[in-house]
Amino acid sequence: NVRCASLVEQLAKRQTADGAFSWMPQLPGNRMITTQVTQTLLRLKQMTATDGTTTMSRSTANTADRILSKAMTSLDRMAAEEVSRIKEQQRRGEKVGAPDRLTLIWMYLHTLTDGVSGKVKKDIDYLLPLLKKHAAGQDIYEKALTAIIFHRFGAPQVASDYIRSMKEYLVGTPEMGLYYDSHKAGRTLSSYRIPTQVAAIEAISLVAPDDK
Image 1 (cartoon, one colour):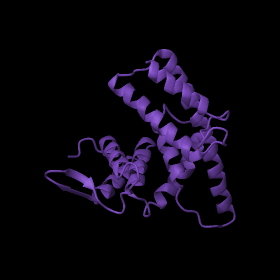
Image 2 (cartoon, rainbow, N blue to C red):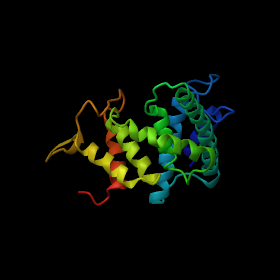
Image 3 (cartoon, rainbow, N blue to C red):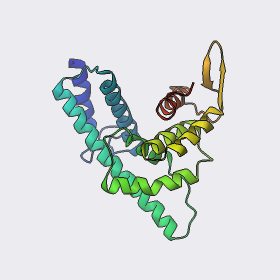
Image 4 (cartoon, rainbow, N blue to C red):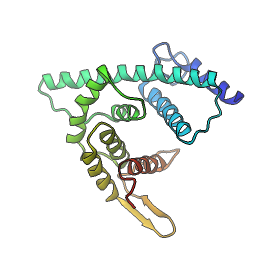
């Protein structure tokens, strides 16, 4: 509990006044860093809520919730700016593609919250058709998040279509089981293809839980 409280306190000190997180202290808030911190905290909150375990005291948990609330508000503002930019492109008659990766993750993060309303809901509703229209260029990680998003926001058949697409890239052996070994499953320097595998497991478990 003491270590957990210390880490949460340090995280709170790193949060900027507008709820974002930066690369280093004294630097402006950064959307990517804020997204990564928020995604980690939301997933941890969901995991502990599911299995009933937590090492946080009530005070520490409340502080973590305040950090999350401020961070989501900051990301909502950044996403709104991106939506405004896309709408301006459309007004000028320019070609508009799929929402960028950080906007996609922002939409996914809202599947882990208690619900959406107001401006956030309007922005997500605006982005969903663009997401569906420009699915061809997505990697498997993005397909997994998109499946979760459509499942959460009322399009289960679309979500199932994404799951079928993801499964086309699966390979496996009796020893290793099923996994992804494709350029569509992006690598990271620190985590290899683990983020893609985790996202795929989450999506399939949610959208097609009875699928063996």
